[in-house]
Length: 287
Image 1 (spheres, rainbow, N blue to C red):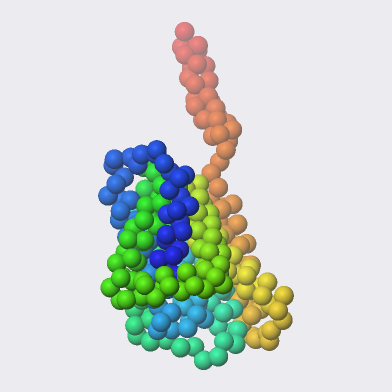
Image 2: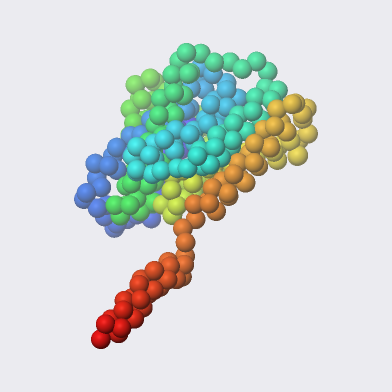
């Protein structure tokens, strides 16, 4: 499945980037970003061999925190206490909402926990290094292509070594239904990744993760509206934390909002202009 997704993205983006040159000073960083991308994607999917989807969802819902920590180390960003509180409320709300939904007994193993732990470390670096490489003149389309080429080559070697390549190809050639589902899945994954990269390019890695976490929260909320389920004590608490995070974040932005250019000019005129005026009066008096 992962090899099919990478191959689909390469086929889709190769014509879009034909003739475009990657800046020379971005080559090493681009390869590093691609390796992190393959690492987090592969480890996240591999973890499902050792733990169930609800457990994975709960853990991955908290990746905003390591991404913010990564942006401090990699990009030198700074966040206020309100912004950290907002992030904790958002992640905590999604986690509590997930844990309150009846999924049966959560299943996890040491191997699954190790896969997810390394994947979260990769997540902390990925978006921030993507932002860094995009700032060097690499386009989102070029980044999508190189990441997918790297992933395709890696997964091709893996599937050839573990003997799953030929059976997988046979299944695709003989089962039309499976092929159709995989194509739709690959389109959805590619479109989602492209949109996230665009958010990283235009805003930041943290903004992109906030959007995906809010999307996850809204998806959970919509599932309860469309497909009514048993409501537990954690559902209203989780929802309140998610919506409360939005208000805290808005307050943080409002409190930290820089003054406009007009405000700075007015302050300059009040200080500098006043001093100049006083100085001129003193000069005239001396004459």
